Amino acid sequence: MAANFEEYSGSQCPPHIESSDSEMEVVGSESEISESDEDVDELDNANESEYTCFVAANGSKYWTPNCDDKYKPQTNTYIPTLEEAFTFYVDYGRICGFDVRKSTKKSDARGNLLAKYMLCNRGGNPKKKKSEETCVNVGEKQKKTRRTTSRRCNCKAQIILKPAGPRGFVLMSFVEEHNHPLASGAERMFLRCNRNMSIPYQNFIMDCARANIGPTRAHSLAKEQFGSFEDVGATVFDFKNFSRDIKVRIGDHDVDMILAKLKLKKETSKNTFYYDYKVDKNGHLTGLFGQMLLGKQTSMQC
Image (cartoon, rainbow, N blue to C red; front, side):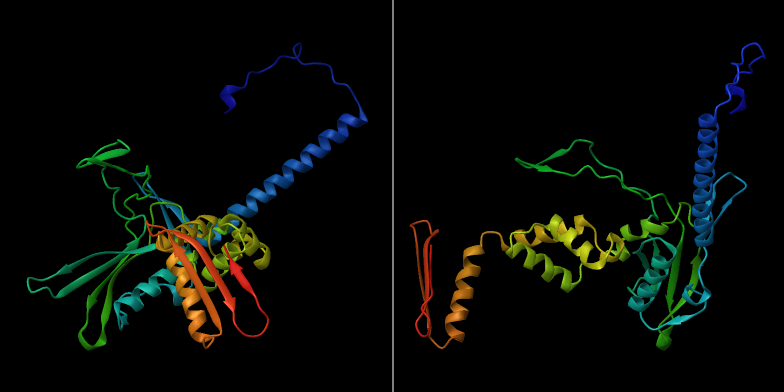
């Protein structure tokens, strides 16, 4: 950096003008710089407390999470089932700032399980695409493919489990180091393990849809209820994807759902509710009528 600056002689230096305003500006700028440096130092210290970064002899960087031993996998420990082992490793990844996925397994000639691998989500190499084109010919039709990027970087962090008879499975190997930075701070909310579309969220999105509120605004409402986007536990894209899946699931059966709801209402109201509808020659709904037969007369017609 010093080589990029030129040295100025005394004749080139502009004369100094003493001014109280200039002194205040200099003092203010120095205080702002010191505050920004303190913020950067605090951020670096916070990141260092979450993980430790070291450089190998070949120049490669590795990140090791700083985690309490009670949350860390320990070799030669027994776990009853593979699902419990996977849940334990997912919780460990949530604390340390990385996602986990199930990987390959080894079996003998009879199909008996010999070893099961669970590794960091960025483990392995990205799959090579057969074609870089966005459209691939499938018979006479064209199938559009998404342009997606893989974040896999052949990370070696993993656990290996082997069957241990009645005791379940034994953790035979645990690789702790990652070859990529770990998520920290506000980045943790984007981890897959922290993005959960629970049943209350699903009902909330459907209730908003009935009130003609889209998934984006529904996510903003959820943020106002919980206080921040980090507390929501799902991104706006998760809300959009769920809304899309509901529409795809309904598909061409939206009228069938309305008629089924009216039929159920008629059966549960002990024949005090009457409804009728008409369709055209193509089976499309063209008219719908419903009315309560007892009490206050209410009707619905379209």
